[in-house]
Image (cartoon, rainbow, N blue to C red; front, side, top):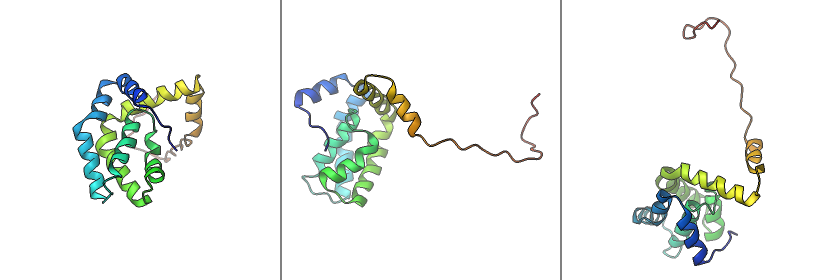
Length: 147
């Protein structure tokens, strides 16, 4: 269950956000996009503000974007297929335009929680190893000879 926040805490977090994220979180366009997405999925009227609340928490760095689908599934009790569809559309219309800012505030909040640089180490360890590309033997007319 996601952590609950007071109105004062939310205001403080919103005020500390980069201007573009704050504008996205509070914009009428974002609200309309979320409403339209939820309406297209035939969500009950009471569920729409809940989806918007969790989307806002992603924009504020309180929920990792990768956890958004699971959060709305569990907290709003949405079916996997519906949550997946909503997440895909919100990612495209709301989160993607400010993706770099969301990632940067998630790094900052993770570092503050940990209090050290071990967060970076965890991210590196959890990544899949890079596959080495095998170079075909023989002549390649597109490659220059390097001496």
